[in-house]
Length: 112
Image (cartoon, rainbow, N blue to C red; front, side, top):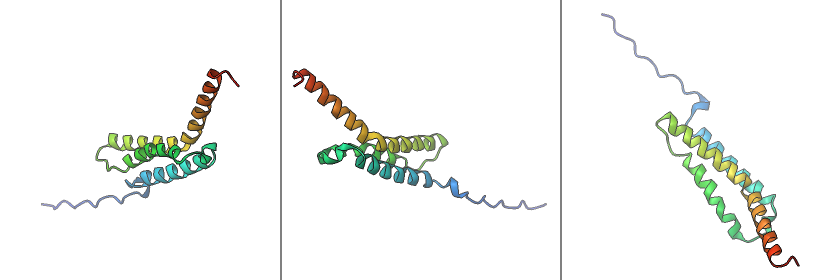
């Protein structure tokens, strides 16, 4: 009888590592949040306006959770991408909302 040869595991491809995508999302969220915050007028506002950045960072942190199945890996990638996008646009969205609220309050007070 012939002995069956043992198969060597395939070499792990560098772009298939489980930590690469979450690391890229983390860097993108931090850089996007910093750029979005610094490029909006709320940078002169109170520090509490930066508090909602916890939400996109929590979404990116959820992408670091190890995944055993393909669907959980896809979910982690989606959470990381959404978190990075929210970190990028939050400051401009907050500026728009604050300006809209100020305009509505100004209009209800008689406009001047």
